[in-house]
Amino acid sequence: MSVQKLVECIRQKNNPTVAGLDARLEYIPSFIVSQCVERYGETLEAAAAAMQQFNISLIDALHDIVPAIKPQAAYYELLGPKGAEVLKNTIDYAHEKGMYVIADIKRNDIGATASAYAEAYLGCTKVGDKELPVYNADSCTVNAYLGTDGIEPFLKECRAREKAIYILVKTSNPSSGEFQNRDMEGKPLFVRVAEQFAKWGEGLDTPSGYNQVGAVVGATYPEEQKIIRSIIPKAYFLVPGYGAQGATAKDIANAFNDDGLGAIVNSSRGIMCAWKKTGKDGVDFMEAARAEAIRMRDDIVSAIR
Image 1 (cartoon, rainbow, N blue to C red):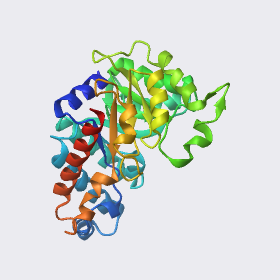
Image 2 (image 1 turned 90 degrees about the vertical axis):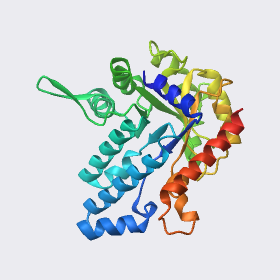
Image 3 (image 1 turned 60 degrees about the vertical axis):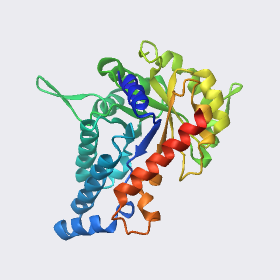
């Protein structure tokens, strides 16, 4: 089961963090970009080649200490068809290295369209008599705004293929409260979303005690973390907002349960761009990313114990 795999990876590495691989060209050391431009010209193909080399190298640097990666689909879509290939190759390589993969897609729709999103990222495309996996992530992020009609196709894949989803509940961005904190019959909307988890997670418990329906809960809102955790104690939290968005390790403590589990904290730019702080023009980007990942691990583990 997907969440069971995540829990086992976190326990093995004693590290409740995920590296967000959300690369833009400005996040990639210039020597990598220059090599690819020299080979392919100033093209999307060159940008995609640079991104793939960067991602593969980061996975090589991190896989033995970080349990998971979280590629954000928008950065790959920015490069068109070549970017889609890089996303697929990144997911496959992370799996080869034993890492858990969260596809950060934040998609949803209704009916057949929601099914297409779910099948693309968690399931298979049927061609004749064959069912062919597409991106084959372990899990993905999902927007709940359309209600159960939009969630059920993803739950179908969770049940059939032992996948997981992380539903947006309280996001880390400053304006999230414009809707998520609005009163809805006496309770904030984010509370109403969390209350639906009991229904959505039926039959999806794992041996770890955690459900395959998880929640995206921002590190920048520690009080809301506490409220949501009290409503859904066995949902795994994906926690963005640490580091570049301003949240500290102390801010995410409420996302965890007393067992030290229940949440995985994301850092994207903090890890990818760690090389920018060393003054070595990126030649040490792998070492810098690894050092930052270790620092982050130690910071968070010390805060939740």
